[in-house]
Length: 78
Image (tube, rainbow, N blue to C red):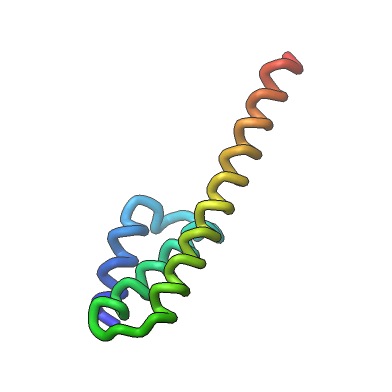
């Protein structure tokens, strides 16, 4: 658990005073799977890590697209 805590601390070091996003949760779950995979081979650890990373990518893209659309819309409404 210490290894996972260390990785999570690095990932969250700049945002510990804010809410954790779904995107960040996926990244943390990915990190946990990578730590587990580094100790013992289990194919599902790699499959799970890939799935969590893909979810993180989709959530991050969705968030960025939503923020861009909002900024774009606000710019042209001025």
